Length: 395
Image (tube, rainbow, N blue to C red; front, side, top):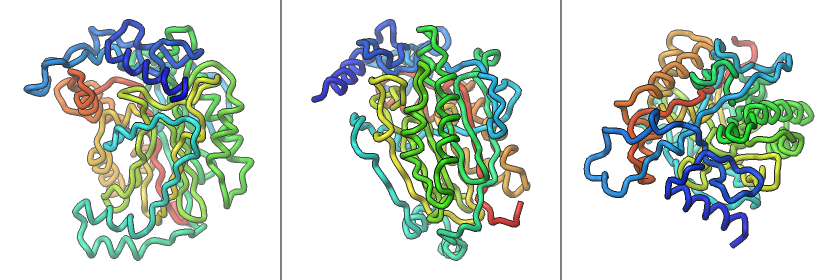
């Protein structure tokens, strides 16, 4: 067992004992609880009354492990950059129902998953679509059709306590071809470090790296490696980058941000999250103790005009299930809403659920599965980026 792996497992074991510094980031290879998104007070997020019956014995208080994100705007005026202003309504997020894809490897070759047309059809049928609907979706597929583009909009809602500083999420939308999101790890705040700056720098360098790639053949692993290497400020962050290519979409994801692909009211694909343990996400950092870009998962998914991508940070997917997001998208498409309006509506629903202490959410389900007594939503930064896949010549 490598020293890094041993340290992570020790950190995970310590976290189960609810030690006091559960909010420490993965800084300087210290023996503190690496990577935990801490900072919330037990009075905010403590033991919940509505526990699942029969599971009270041995449950642990999840309050010390819940993250709060925040961070100031760095003031760069790039034309492609959508800022983290409290009044903004821009961006996406995600959680996963395969929520415990736990792998402890940080240096192995990235996992690449190709999601073919047959698999897409099967996934759609599995969600109760008729054979006729599936055939129509198959007829629409123009995989590798370079006439497609991404029409994107975003919404960002900082944690209410972080509105003045702008939160710790970051994202970009580039040239109707690529989008990216990053989620700074809030535990750094206890060390006087703004992880939001790390996330913003990471996305800025990612855009530069994307611009250096051939437009018909973007290598997202190379993009993420360049962005990570060039981001030198203190902090750590998740990362998800998606690009439209000749073969459909290519995506790379590290951590608990991610995306879903929706077609005709059905979720065709959802990227899995990467966690070392409950609420202990994979993350990039400007030191030697982080997970590496090579630990990210790479996906290739065929797409068709009319498909919708919803990408985002965990503030979205911790609070909304797939069906919740898909229902908003279906309503928005029928109403003729632009991507930005759709992103706003998804983010607003996620915030509403985050503040609801009487509803089961993806985060509360995951906490309960991990042995914590927790019920309700998780208040956090919420970033949602919605991209409509459209043919050139259409708006």
